[in-house]
Length: 389
Image (cartoon, rainbow, N blue to C red):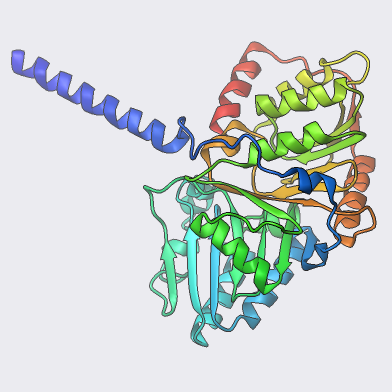
């Protein structure tokens, strides 16, 4: 009897250890690198750049993937792909086809696919369509293609392509049909050898961003966590208007900064999808907190009628933040992410294109003026959703 008790205790201890280990692996509650206090320099705010011509904004998946496929077709030396989700569907297969063709002509291709992102591919996996990064019919073991799927590395939610030494394409889009033709989202292209090199050194090798520079790429990695601090900096800097378009919004520090901006008289517009694919109750709790923050000047909430996967802020019509990081605790401190910060002039094509699209999205949306009435169950689901995703 004593042996059975000891065996049961050992099993309990081992099971607990596995569950605790799984919790820390999946949720990484201790975060990545230390969170920087100040990321953007005073020079960034004082001197809008007149050199954003090496940045190009792509709105929507058709525009972005057209650019990605074309860049893959013309690559001569190397291609690096980092993604969170890669499905075996039409656009996923087309990217595979183009990468194989590049490898056949001698281009060195490396694909780094986050393992945790596979959770969002389970539906296809159960249908017998695993991600092409795991199959021989896809990319696995193909000549000149290296596939990295390390289960023990940090969660990497960033999405980017580095092509030769002259182009980097990055933003919020994973490789799947919904990002290609169904969801609203943004990507950015850097078209410059100098800044593509700087981008590669920053996101892959944790090097500092050059100074001075016409724009800034902030990251969350093991060396430093920059993105939330930089977002709060630009929110705190706002004098007239803040436009936020995001898919998932629940981070307490960002909510606090937005409410403080509204309370000092800044006009705040928040665009959220009316029916997001996940995080709906966490979004609704945030909406309630924003609407109830001030009787005089609460943020205006706009429910976008389609699924928006955007991660965008625009401050005073001239300071933009666009990237892969959601406004959630997970993206802010525990996942590898990247976000571009640019301070341009109102007539700069990059800034103007973003501003025009955000205004259009506000016009297409339904303004919500009353908080949601949430049940206890929905509030619990919001709390869980906030920290799970």
